[in-house]
Each structure stands twice: as C-alpha cells, then as structure tokens.
Image (cartoon, rainbow, N blue to C red; front, top):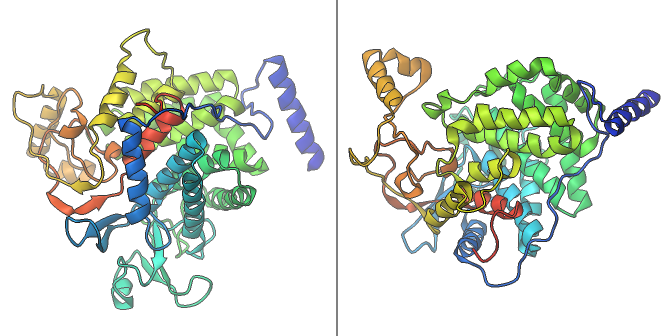
Length: 475
C-alpha cells in the first residue's frame, strides 16, 4: 500500500512538472490556496466596515445561544434588551457554517482576536452537530441543551419527528434536530474547510480533519446518501449529487490526503463526466423555482474552484471555471446579490473594467443598501405595476400554473417576476437574504420588529469580498 501511494504521488508530480496532465490528474497533497495576508487595515473604518462591525457584535450578543448555533430570535420588545425565544433553528447548521467562514476570513483580514475566538467556538459547535446524533457521519440541523428556549419539553419533543432528546451518555441533557438534508452538509463543510485554511490552531485543524473524514467516509460507504438514526436515507434531500460529491471529496482530500478521497476525486474529474455536471448544475429553472439552490451551487463551486486551482490540472480547472460562469452564475449575474457577486469575482473569469466596473459598483451599492442591525422582519409590498418590466416567461408560467393547479404540487410554486433584479431594499428581506429570489414582484414578508435575523448574509458577503481584496477598510 505504501509503495503504491509513493508511486502514485511520483507519477502525479512528474505529470505536473512536465505539464502533460492525465485525465484524472490530482496534484500531490498537501496544497494551499490562501490569499496573502497583506490587507491594509490602516485608517478609519468606512460605512461598510462599520456595518460589518455592528453585525459582528450583534451576532455574538444575540444569535449564538445555547451551544452556539446561528438562530433567528424574538425579543420581548423593540428595545432589544431581552430575548423571548428562538423562532427558527431548522437551518442552523448551514448558517453556522457560513458564519464560521465569515469569521475565519475576518480574522485572516484583520487579525482580530475576537474573530479568531468566534471561529474556534463555531468549529466546536459544528463538531457537536456531528457527534450529538450518535450516528457515524450524520450531522444534526441543530443541537442545544434542553433548557433552550427552542425546547418545549420531552412530551413536545416526542411528538416532533425531527426532535431527539438525550437522557444519558456524553450529551445527556441535550436535544438535537434531525431529518438533515444535503444543504446543511454543504454549509457545514464550507465553514470547516475555510476555518481549516485560515486558523492557526493545530488542535482545531486536527479536529476538523477527523470530522470531515468521518462524514466523507460515511457518505461514500452509503453510496453518497445521507443515512440517519434509523439506518435509512434522511427524509429530506438525502442524495449527494455529483457536484456535491466532488465538493466533499476535494475538501476531504485537502484536509487529510486520504486515499479514498483521492480515488473519488480522480473518478469525479474525468472528462467523461462533464456532461453530468452540466445537466446537474444547469440553473435556468432555479430562476423561477427553488431559488435557494443557486446559493448551494455558488458555495459548492466557489470552494471547488478555490481548491481546484492548486489540486487540479489547468484544463480541468479552466473547464470548471467556464462551467461555473455559463451554467450556474449566468442566471444570477449582477442580480443585486453581493454574495454571489464576490464569489464570481474571486473565482470566475472576471477581469475588472478600467473604469466604472459594473461588478464592483454593484457590490458596493448592494452592501450599502443592506439595512444595519437589528435586521427586523418587515413587510415588502407588491411592486407598483409600471415600475418594472415584467419577465414574459414568468407571466406565461403563472398563467400555466393557474390553468393546471396540479403543477404546483409537482414542481412547486411560481411567481410573477421582473425582467431585471430588484435593488436590495425592494427585495423580500428575510432569512439569509442571498438565497431569496430578487426578481419576485409580489408582496412578501410580515412586519414584526421583535423578530430579528442574525445578519450572517451581510457578514458573509462583506468578509468574503474583503478577504479577496474587492473592498478595503475605508469603504
């Protein structure tokens, strides 16, 4: 086994040096692709940085209770001095992972010890979501003590299919939320691999390595299916699709050099699978339905491209960049979404224009328009007819759905849309903002100033853009 491993690495290194990459070329482990730590932190903070500082403080103060998972909170009143209850936790793991990535990038950019402490704490939180379930490789949506405001007693928990309370073992007195879907795994891995690369703490890196490998091996052993506490596929989106398989395998190989991860990675980058990626990732329909899938694909391909730049051959990486540009990002391009925008600018084939670059301009505009904390629940009225150009395809879809109502059960709801994306403050501002459709013109949301979102959306976009030097401290 050892001799075969050495031979494999020698052949890969030889191909790399000679510049003639085989179809399944993967560079020898380990490789690194981290931005130089030369961000200019001198001078006063501009309004965008000041807003990020406010959201950083707000999140620590209010939105990481219990064992630390990111949640939506309800306050007792609009003085925002006392909490009433956690009001949303089901997607905590994905947003905790995204928040962890933001804090790792913040620490890398600024050297702020609080950001480092936040990142270390969130790494432990995500590790807990894996181990609290007691199922190898199965990650919970949320975990907390039974004293949490999200827990309403054992009798209540026993009536909730997702709820599991623990009365013995190392997590006695806790509960966890299950039926975990692949989107939670995508966020979980995104946070951990970013922290692995940007934190200078070897015990944390070792813990990340062990957790990532546990998840990777479990998924591979189960044929790329999430298997839950019953020994069955999880009830919600359990299948790990081909792009996510590549994402998981590349991350596992990056943090460990694991041979099984290397084998999967080689299988998944062969040219014969390119059509499968195109079919899996063609996001045209996500413009009109399941818009959140655009967020998952951007997180996935941002990481594939970032790591693929140092692990994969030039031909594979170039094809993947084109695939990301044409098959995924096309349908969200310049759509008043600074999260997608910064991912594209950092990993896609973007070259800044000599002057008045539309990507930089929209990045600044969208972060400027995003409200400062507290990010309260609000009602967005229907946009006035004549204030936008109707997307004719969306109008035809709405008419078709009205004629055949069963289409909603089969394919989900569709909505009337604008042809061009609406500015941030005309969009539905709720949850993680960047996964919501910016083209929808119907009314949405509800006014409830006591319900407050954690602001991970602003933090993720701001610190990603700062990490890739698309913003400076004075902006």
